[in-house]
Image (cartoon, rainbow, N blue to C red):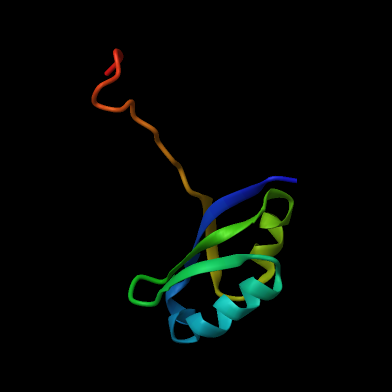
Length: 79
């Protein structure tokens, strides 16, 4: 199993219940890092095998894996 970082989008109709949805996500195995109520996004991490379970929660519109980028340090040969 591998843990991945994700962003969960909440649909507009369920924005008032974002805290309850955050709790349901935690119950489904997600480790919630941040709940951004003003934009309807919840960030955190979860085991990759459990991602599809999150779509069963009412109000979850989309689940996306977060992308990370690494650039070379300023003093490296390749820039």
